[in-house]
Length: 482
Image (cartoon, rainbow, N blue to C red):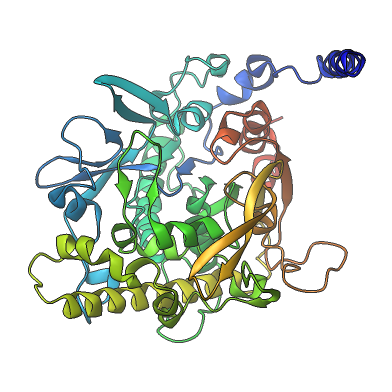
């Protein structure tokens, strides 16, 4: 035993010694300072789009924190008033777009504030990616990113905060408005700084997780609404304003974790309150993170060749008694619908909301899965994880109405590699070479978890290269950067 341990330790030392040089983090100052400080009318502005949970939410009328802190007077989902602030309204017969509250998003969640045993604790959320791109003055800070100096003239990076509880198509339409506003601002600045009037500004997007779905929908359809029946026809309307899109850990084929969360609710940490299934069940966005039925992510435990059902149908949820269809969630529904005294009526409202969310999610998935060749000049880049065991296939005991086993696959701990790629070989006979409706310009795999990859030096180096150094036709056509 001692000999094996010694040999194992020696092997580890040799491996570490062998990769010590190439594993060293890059010198970002040497690599990118000159490019970062080169400001002219050709530089594309950059918009950062966070994923689900990645924007702060506050209640407009009261100013209370709905998401972004677990300290002070935040909206605790275990309190009736807090639960009603966190959940979206439900009303039978009303379209999802009309179910509004007073919650707004004042910014991307750079830090998450938590109170533990009376002591404040801060966890970095999107702080690193904001620092990488110099968004909102995030410069000269820790993690080695102080090496990136954009100079005093840096004015072309923006963060797109949004209410991540709501429908992703709705947020894509808000992204359109945001882009038009930022384009107009940049055009004014270019005229003031460089004397170039009405510059045709194109933007780059760096989007993490669910933010990548919003970016892809906008690129393919612009501000177009989903039709009531059938998928929309890709128009690539977003191409008028967007040049490059860099997706980071985006669940292009969904994540089974979203089904688990809608089934049971979620507690993000043992010291934090639980968000019940009926609260999360009011969010259209989570349903839009569901995996594809055709990929067979849910199978029967007794026969793994059989799909456990179509989880885009409300009957599936009723049969298994999960999520908003669970009768055990009635006490939560009573809190969310205080004016409805009849349990049967509360259930009818909940199932109506569930049906609307599922139908919307299915149409959204069909829109993103539509095979369509992008026009010339559209560049889609993907950075994804494939080194962390990630939930892939759940075995359902239909009699007990529960999940008895979850198979794992390579991913980032949240999103499977196959989902990020939208690999259509899943659930079908395998074939060589990737089969995907997405025409990727370039794909790179990282060995970090879902949020941790934004702290990976490989992430930093490659994103900065794509945004600052990678050749663009518009830059070199007239030899203006010789």
